[in-house]
Image (cartoon, rainbow, N blue to C red):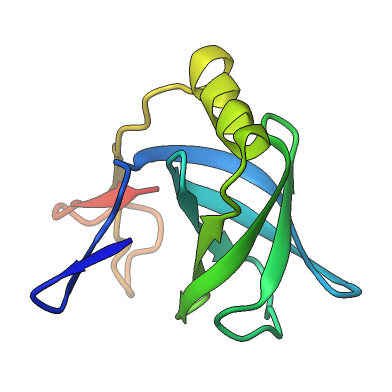
Length: 133
């Protein structure tokens, strides 16, 4: 990442994805979902607590990506930003994922019907649209 006028900018564009895997830190392992991915890093949503601080070395293991090592750059509300170690292996694995496995991710609209408290058998006439990820 580079800094310009105290604004942090990414070196590579990230693409949204849904890849499930594990994050390993020391002797612990936490299930995670990779939300977006680039050649230099990724943002993950953790399924449990990860007891690591910014600057800690971690390993990401996913079926379509393999094993990639990196450093935690930020943590916020169950999400983690990881910068990959700069080596040709990590770039090759990410490039291979985008070439063979990546599918464009788009939000899906789902209709949720609200039921009236007194009339449980009929849906409410005002159904709401929600984004489902």
